[in-house]
Image (tube, rainbow, N blue to C red; front, side):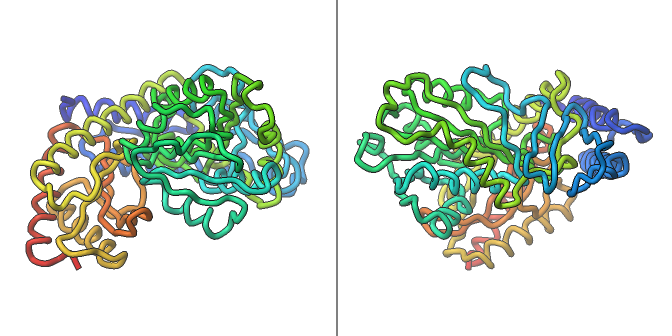
Length: 428
């Protein structure tokens, strides 16, 4: 259990880490509340972005000045016109052994990274089955259905059975950190040697997560080429949403003999770089957090994520006991949010309105909650949620990094509010 005082001291260390990246640091007093933590964090990161633009004024899209030397903290960049040849030298957002791992291909967002990989795969395979687990990210599935016709979407269900057995058509597994916990576990416990490629969206796992290392070991053991795609706008910027940034990292299987007669996935990295160039999806130097990579950053990030996960487990237990009929899903693989259903079916509009009403009313009571369409903040965030597998809408409650008692009080308040709202017929 983390006390409020211990929490505020930890948050002050986070703020100092950000503040020390400024050429002229702000006069920073220790925070006295969660609201002060949030306000100071976004103020400092805004100052960092502004300072970067003022210092990097020669580093334009047309690379007109050879005197430009664009950097952002520990990251150094080289590129020519329109960043078509954008290369980055700097620390990894991940913490695992290198092995047969490529340098990251950085993009303008997580969706830009996965889009480039999926579209580039058309240069490797004419047709393939793309296997998706329950709970996979809705926009990724929308992208595949609408814009990636060479991949046939195959929705899996439990038990997986022989879903990973080799077939005439190449099989690609989309392993998503958004998946339901049971489906994710079933996948990484299976024999994956029949798969041709695994596309692993790690966005909702910390860069140091044991789940990522576990998937790496599983892929190497099964001899499967692996691509890690990620949005760095979530867990990698200390909850400050520093900038839109994504990446793709390519890992080759460790047994080429098992790949005999299979698609030439070694070409996928080069094809992805080309897709990023043609789609105009390269990253912006200004979006690389300058505070990444140090021992202090890694320690504070681990502490943040650990606090979120502890709070998430507590919330899942509480909602399961107090709202058993109104809990939509409490066990995602990442543990970063839960979803609540209505007493009557919700549509997008009613779910959005319920999320906004709950946030506004509880925030008026002084609780650290906001209506915001993301997660990983220093406040609870609510938003509508669409389960594309069941085509049902719910309200997502994103767990935050808050002191234990504050979070427990907020969890109880959310449960009370939702129960009262639904008993009044607020579900439709």
